[in-house]
Image (cartoon, rainbow, N blue to C red; front, side):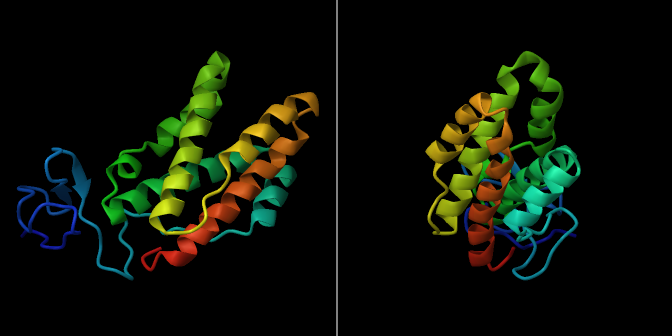
Length: 177
């Protein structure tokens, strides 16, 4: 039995040949899961959660930074699933596990966490654009990050709160979130 649900950016119903959970973006050959109907959530898609930016900050401090890694994985997964629901290939192809790996084990090489953080900020800005909300200012995030080196990393605690605020705006405008 073939799942006939598609988004406008996906090929025509039944064109994805084989899997009842996947479709191919037209002209790209990229296989993406077929999104669930609006308002429903599938096990293949993590629902986007609106989180209090202050709770993100508080849990990060309370757990001595451990919550930050869970938050980082969760927002990257939500961004990937948002891209899949919207048929936005760049977001849909992102890898939450790879992003988390880059900021944990990759810290030994210095460069992977920086690339992962920059790409996550770019994904958040893209989701904000798709949701037609004002995008978070990447320069603020970068400035706070650089200033943190001089101030013993204390300002870094506020970056997740700032980014979560921007995501909340995008998720609030998305009827499928």
